[in-house]
Image: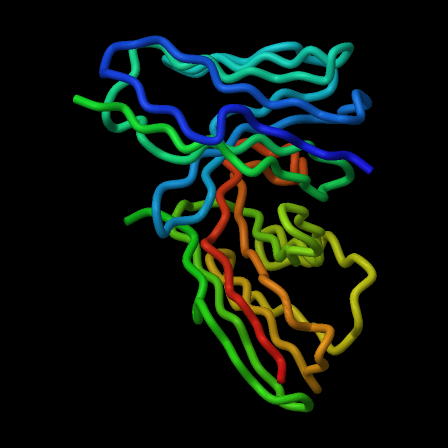
Length: 110
Length: 117
């Protein structure tokens, strides 16, 4: 059974710093992967989707990569801003079902 | 606020009752979904509607019936509630016509915690 782990559980950085969030899988047979953002009291919003044939996706200051051989994905955030403060979750997608990690709570200090 | 909103956030009810959970999205998405949180951090898809048309209907008891009055709304009605129905239910929407969970712009509501006593 697939288990998804996210490290670190919480991260605090000063504004402007580049940072990396990590997501790892026990079963490297990852089908597709999404990174989500969750603001307090709100639902999840998809940030980046990496389909099975892809290795990375970029959107603005965000870059997500997927290395199936090692069962890992990273979310890189460049030039972090206080507005990036949120919880970030990765999810393995298999036949429309989603298995999530516990998330990384990011705080970007002004 | 553009979002997917679910009501109520919490629902406690007795066995045998009939209840509904409402979901609305103002993102202009064509596709909406209902998921059940099967265990911690695992969301299992139940239903999906595209522009009011049912396109996914997973194996769930027929006591669960989705209703989509328009493409911005997808409500979940549950008849004769059972103890095992207790769970968190999530509504979601996406912008693609049909890529399922591979759609871009996937947005979830904050969930409805249903407790059947």
